[in-house]
Length: 450
Image (cartoon, rainbow, N blue to C red; front, side):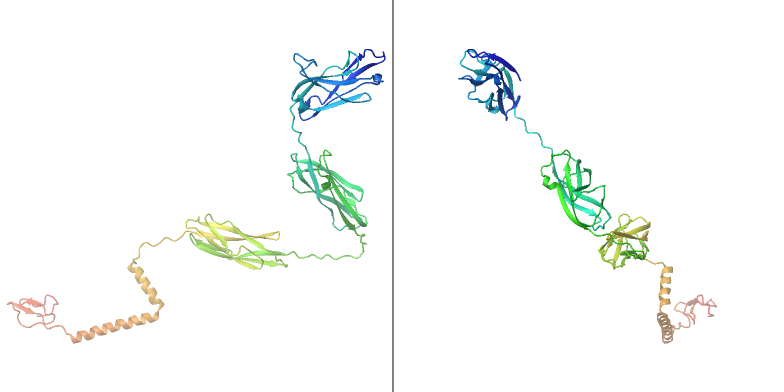
C-alpha cells in the first residue's frame, strides 16, 4: 500500500491528508469484480465543503493520458464513510490487458491531493480448481459376539464404503466407535477402492461388556478433514443388550459332539479295459450320511486326449447314481489312465478314482475264404456242439450206401460178347469185356485168364 501526503491550498494548515489506493484482486481474472478502495485519515476532518474523491483508470501504464496510456474514465460518487471510500467494477467491463489507476481528492483549490499511480493487470478467466473430496459412508455397524454377557470382551466393527470420489485410490480415512457417548476405539484405515467396494473394519480395542441396553455409534472422518460433501452418510448407530453373566457351577458338563452331515462318492467298477474307438461305462454312486441334503455337482478329469466323458446326472441331491460314459477315439493313445470323479456340495468336496486301460484295436481280416483246415475245424466244432446233427449224418451216409448197392443189383455190368471180335484174332475178356489179342493168355486190363 502506497501513501502520498499533500496539502490542500487555501485550507487551514492542519488540513493535510494521506490518501491511499488499493486495487483488489490484482492481477484480476476476467470473471472477477475489481475493487478500488482507500482511506483518508482522521487528520482530514472536518472535511471541507465541496470535497470529492475520484479514481481515474488508464489503458496502459503511467496514469497519464497520451503516449502509451489513454484515459478510460473517471469514477464519481464513490462511497465515502468516515474516511473510507470504495468502488467496484466487473473486470469484464474493462477487458483483458494492462492498466493503471490513480485516486485523488478534489477540493475547491487548484491542486488536488493524489495517491501514487497503481498498476492493474486483467487476465483471462481460469477454470475453477478441481474439488478434491470423497463421499464416505458407514454401511453397517455391529459387535462380536452378537449376544454378549457381562464381562465379555466385545469387538466393535463397521462396514466402510466410498460412495463417490474425485481423488484416486487408495485413500485413508479415520473410523471411531462409541458406546453411548464414550469413545471406545478408533484408528486410521486404508481403503483400497474403487468407489462402491464394501470394506469391513474391525477396531483394535475391545469393549468390556456391562449389563443393560447400549447404543453403538460408529463414524468415519475424512483425511484431511472437511473434504466430505455429505457428512450425514458418515455415521450409523445400533442398539444391543448385554445379559448378566451366567453363574458358574462346579458340576462337570458333558460335551456332545454333533455329527457332521456329509456325503461319499464311489464307482463301479473301479477298473476297466477297452479297445481304441470303443465306449465304456462306469456307475458313480453318491451317498449321503448324517442328514446331508444339499445339491452335489459332479465332474470328471484325467480322460485320454480326444476322449469324451459324459455324466448322465451331472448333479443331484444324495442318494443318487450317475452313469459315466467314456467314448474313445480310434487313435486314442494306449496305456493306463486314472480318471478322477469329483463331487462338490455345501462346502464339501470328495473324489473317487477309477482306472481305464486302453488297448490297441484288433486287425481286420482281409480274406473271406477259409482254409481246409479251418473249414474242417469249423465243421467239427459245429458237429461237436450238436449230437443230433452227427446222428443224422450217419443215417444219411448209410442210406446212400444201401441205395448204391441196390442199384448195382438192378443194373449188372454188361457181359462182353464171347467169341472173336469183329476183327480177326481178337477175343473179349469174360470179366471186364476188354478186347484182347488171341495170342494173350491173360486180360491186359484185369489180368483174368482168357
